[in-house]
Length: 200
Image (cartoon, rainbow, N blue to C red; front, side):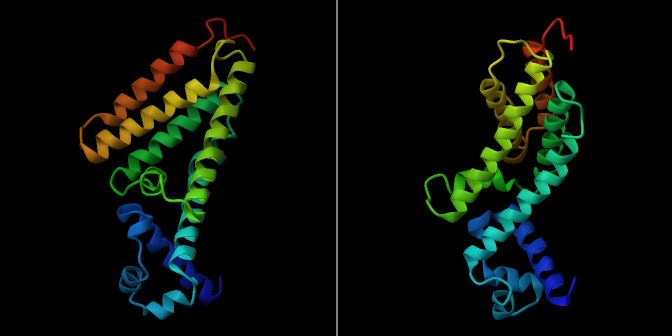
């Protein structure tokens, strides 16, 4: 990369770290300039506005989520192996984010009633992930790994509940063992929906 691109990438890395801890609304040009030992005008040279910076941070977060969770999982065979991989990688990422914070979760709180481009992008990204999970569950039903009467939306809803409970108990309440509880909860979910025949 050229020097300007390298600087921009470095700014975004630090901005993502700050946004993870302080939320997207807590991300300011001044704070970022201090962390980068740059002037505010130097940061503005790479991002036209604070909102542009927030949008780029959000895109970077989404890109990394896809690289760590989605793309490796779709290499697994369709059906339960892929669904289990998706949840396991998602759980692992959230477990790491306990110390820093999840932008999807914090963003939902920050922008639940705040219309605008950032909210629209957040909603689109989360819906894209939910859509991927729904397709994965439907494939598991089609493969006969899950019962024919399984409601994909209900199963995805319950998976989301486990992740949100993990984030709440581990990050906010700091209750030990939350990751293990989430794992056990998912195993119980799958056992409930599993097709006892499981013929392909």
